[in-house]
Image 1 (cartoon, rainbow, N blue to C red):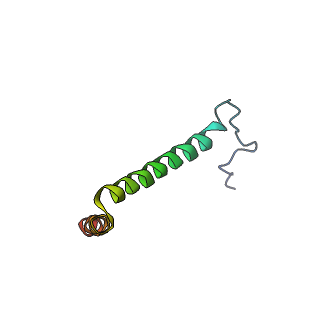
Image 2: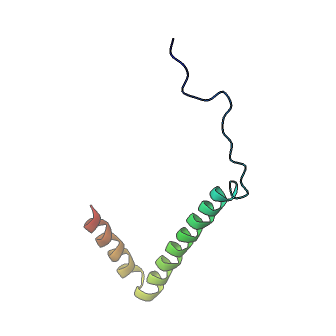
Image 3: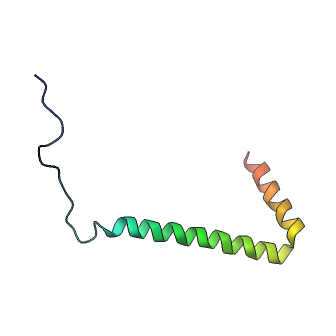
Amino acid sequence: MAQSVHPAHPVSDNSPTADRAPSVLLWAGAGVGGLMVISALALWFHYGTQVFFEMIRTGFAACF
């Protein structure tokens, strides 16, 4: 009969940095999202509403 591939006792990571990885990824994602919002607001205030939306529309058209 075939044996199970999974070990009887699962391996756990007890290192001190094991719990930090999700937190670091969350903070990094929040930082990138915050930079995107800040840069969008900077473009909005620099170029004005009409030019801002035109740039966004042109950027989406270039991607797709």
